[in-house]
Length: 484
Image (cartoon, rainbow, N blue to C red; front, side, top):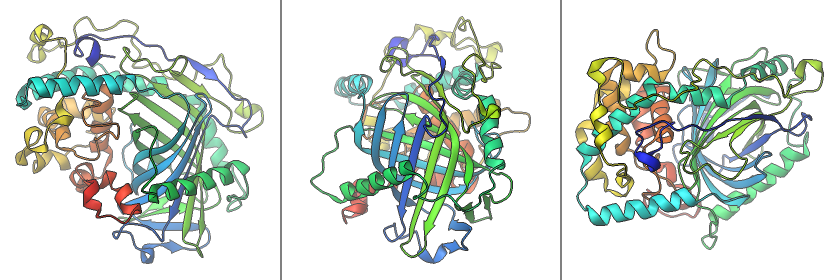
């Protein structure tokens, strides 16, 4: 994977992704997360009148902005955190990680409390570098930045670097065990917050996070934000479904879920989780809870100059259920190797087709311009880009294996992807501070897949929305635009 901090993403760097079995007990999963939605406290776009509840399923309006308290636990890293997540739900046609997506959550997380190793070195270095560059070069050269970014994105995508990250982070054999468990589940409607002490504990922590968000005197100790996608797969029996403008989730039974996590600052990693999620709705109180238990969890530090805490990088797995059918063998790796490369490309900017020969960029500086997120929107985005057609035309093309293949097959689309990202405001903004990250495999991956997975009619609206960071103003009763 190229490193922008080592040599401005000119050469590929190697990093390891070992697979480890860290649990043999299905009641001790490798990852847990809970959402706590109080439907009595939601933005104006959300209406209780849109909720349909029949005892076995809940139906919600698609693309309705919501806030929730959350609580997460990562066994491999001994991390516990709570915070606020802003999100919407929708139907889901394409997914980078899930094979049979039906519904999707698009989310931005804001950490309020954190227990674990804080990894802030890269974010701090980027803050200092970007501040210095703005001081030395007050006028931003957007054309120059875009020229390098296009070459960088094309080189990474054509060499299937991001697909190789997905392969390294997901155990496909275990995925099928999780699907088998979910499809064989017969006790429909029986699971609820009282079924599990872990569920109940996470619920209390998520409720406390909402209370902290309302407290103007609370100070966050770890300014971390994350961009997530969740993909719920269709199963057998009671399962998920959707209409043109609603999503429906079964209650009290597990649903297979895949998720991707992107942290750009202060740490810098990509993560994947696979497991099942169970929903519970209290109609009298207007409370929806979703409890996610993961049996596959991975973390990849894309910039090898900042490899993260010792022992964190890797894929961590455990069994979804008891019995011989669900044994997870530490010696049988279930990952694919289609995109695996044991040798790095010789030249990052040399393409097989001569028209893509950009090797002259190797003579450019080894120091990247990382100041883009410190620049005002007027210097990094044009009205022409905001109103361009590409926002509605980014889909997986026939014959393509992923959204990334589709991007490089269409030069206009590639241009739009690179030029469109600087137009984002709150979606791409890191809580750690303006200038705490820039544009490498992380940003390319999360931005391109957002454009590909979000339904065309909403791509521009959702990725350029100013409200992804409004949670604090919302919960403290302030004008929400003060948090834009």
